Image (cartoon, rainbow, N blue to C red):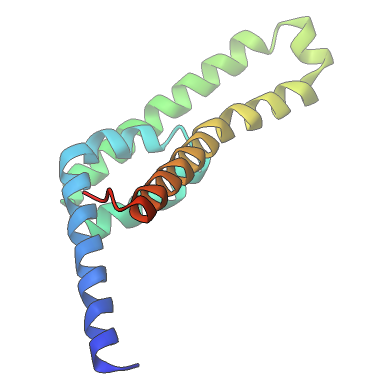
Length: 130
């Protein structure tokens, strides 16, 4: 790569890491805790916490707390809903419903990001970039 391109790339990476660090510092504990409840987010939250230089003890505390709450909630849901005849007879539909509900935040985020990119592109074409 050309040195100028390499420098630009390094600056973008540094900027991204600084933004991630700011978000983790601002929303970190909440993101770690709530990340337990969303399957796709759960995978990436530890990486973002690491990139954002979240203190290990803080990460560990909220991760364990999230795991305990998540486990308790789903054990209790299984206990109470497992006795309902409709759930027993149509368990496949319950599983599909859980998967669909889990995907809603990811889909909503993707749509919101796509709409934001379209708005930015239109503003850039009309010369109204701020």
